[in-house]
Image 1 (tube, helix red, strand yellow):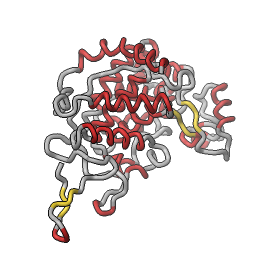
Image 2 (cartoon, helix red, strand yellow):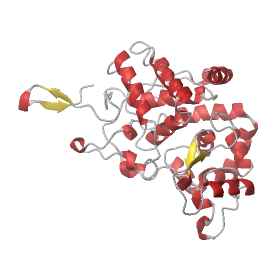
Image 3 (cartoon, one colour):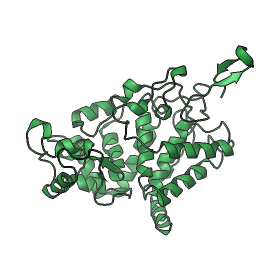
Image 4 (cartoon, helix red, strand yellow):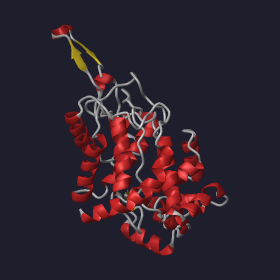
Length: 349
């Protein structure tokens, strides 16, 4: 636990720099939304994330922020990724999309957090806000910046499997991934800053093995991979080997939220094609500029990352009386009104 405290103390240096510029309300959200109804919401979430991070799963911070990304990129930040298949309500889960299947993780921790919130503040905190806070606390607990969360989202009652099939992918070209971000009104700075979340976490061989032996049908490895790093990855992920083997996305400081991701790109040690193309694509000055800037200045990265996280977290909001406050993040609310066969199901929260 002492190591975690050191990381938290380091991160506090950046909170003061960042909070001041974003503490007001943003769109229809407010940083004070739960001040009266669930004042301990952040502490409840932080305690659980810290416990898991320290005692059982050093990957959980990266996993939770990835859930937030993949939720917001499909139909906005509405908790839709968390829904299981539900024939009665016509829900086909986004968890089975290519970018999520056997990859998205941390749902058990979300369930644990939700249970704690329901005990402390029943029917109050949405699953979409849960993911927002858990992502921010994950970054903070891993040495990154803390910021004031904008809150008040409500949960949707649908999933969008087809939308989840076109999530940004690790083998996307720069042009394709820029278009996916642009479709959500996220600009090249947002792309470079949010990609910096790959400064922690793990990647499976299947997500980068296409670069190692026969890149784009050339019969040769991706020429943008550092030779020593290529040898390491080829040994880890041989042709015909186990596609589920994991490696660190950031080979330098794998569990620390810092700016080493960008210096890795400069050294041709980006694990995913979509990452390395931010630096190695000829003529991509609009993104290379920010790779260089963030590599040289961690504070600049942290400030841009926070700004882009808040911008992403404001996508396609459900607020007010729309949607619902899900009682179980895995399923929509169905509350039986009346009794016997005459009862009907309605969403009431």
